[in-house]
Image (cartoon, rainbow, N blue to C red; front, side, top):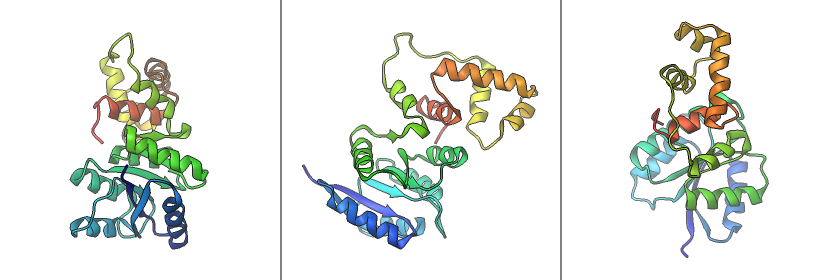
Length: 214
C-alpha cells in the first residue's frame, strides 16, 4: 500500500524534529512537512502542496493555535484527519479540541507504539481516543445497540447541549433555573443512560449523534 502522509504542527522545534524522525521510522508512514503553528498550516494548504492524510496537531501554539487550526482545516478539508498531540490534559481543552473536529487526542508522554497504533486507527477507522478521553464511549457508540436510539427528555437534551459549552455545572444550573443538586442528578442519570463516565463522554456522544455541531 502507499504510505500514509503526515503533517506535524508543533512550535517546539526539538520535539517536532524528534517526532518527525520517529514517524519516518514507522513502516508505511511519510512526513510531508513539519510546521510551527496553525498559520503555517493554512499557508501550506493555500499553496500547491500535497495534502496529508493525517495532521498531528499541538494545541498551545503562537499566532494560530491548534483549536483554531483544526476548526479551519475541518471547515475547508473535512476529509483530512486531525490527531491532537498535546501536554494539555484538562477537560475544557479536550472538549474544545473535539468540538473543533479532532479525530483523536493523545498526550505527548505516550509510548511510541501507542502513537503508531493511534495513527493507524485514525486512518482506517476515523478516530482514536485513549481512556482519558473516553475511548470506552467511542467503542460503545460504534456498536449496534439492540435497544435502538436513546430517547432524551427535553430537560436532559437541554442539559446535554449546555454541557458541550464552556459553562461550569454551576453556571448550567443557573441557566436552567435549577439547583446544583438537580443538575448533578441530571449528570449522573445521563452518565448511566448514555453509558459514559465523564463530561468528555457527554460531548463525544452529542457530537456523534449530531446533537451539537463540532
